[in-house]
Length: 379
Ligand code: CAA
Image (cartoon, rainbow, N blue to C red; front, top):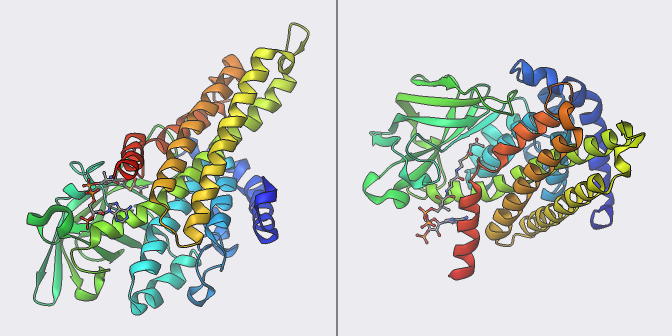
């Protein structure tokens, strides 16, 4: 699909492909098995500008666009879906809201370190009783004098264990539900704010997924991100962009599954010939590729709309829904093509299958994406 890309986007894609293939691919399976966060790779990604692709150089970003971001997350996720989500959650869920809603002072304070990858960010919205119903947050932020006092417990924050900057959503007026929610910036080490349980997961095991606990955390008034009681919109706008990142991650997983399946089908001999000679295999490969390219086009369109400042909520939901289901489809078929070997850790197909599943869940389940799409069509 290079004909849809600019020369600059193609160069970026090739650069990230080379970096991911040479540096990320060889260590991905081992990092997964050992639940090891790829700190050295994230540092290198920062040096290459990949932690701040779509942000202005004034704040330390790479001055590129959201299609470049999509391409980079896809290329990285082709080799390691964990590394893909580390970059995506940092960029879409933390850099983006600070850039979009932050005061000039907040941007100057946080963006240079975040966009260069010197510091990692995490977004903390979900709670045990507030998953799909993101507005049901029970974490509170109460203004006492000139300080905010935060109490509560957040779940499933990607990068939660390594982050030095958190965007956290709390209720500032519980009687108003979604109209009484605000966003805050919290720095690591703030007394009373600490990492709780680290989740043991089915996939994306070298990314951390953490509980964030808040016990009488005192924040200065300036820690508020965006307007008071407008934090639900901050979260929703942020998640629109996040969904593009997860769609791109899913595209990377789908492509990994297809490329591995094609390679294996040419090397595997049964009945005295490569199994790629059999129509049953060919049809699976054709179906996988159609699902991948259709999802790629939806993600490219939504990224282009974001670049152009259009409302792209529905298109981001469509891209994420389709790409995550394509990733599951392709990973499932890749195991089938690998047969018994596909079910073992000797091949990567089983990892793609485990990694693909989360793309149908986080940053809004497939059911929530369908709800967003349907609501926008029916309004
Ligand atoms: N952009 C701007 N505003 C938006 C919006 C958007 N995309 N979506 C909703 N809003 C606004 C609405 O316009 C409305 O404002 P007004 O009253 O002024 O009109 C307000 O927000 C409330 O909207 P809804 O009535 O639609 O709210 P709702 O309670 O019905 O919820 C929802 C809508 C789509 C279900 C939402 O709760 C949602 O997206 N849920 C899923 C949450 C999610 O994705 N969680 C993932 C967490 S992050 C994560 O996965 C961890 C990680 O680290 C990767």
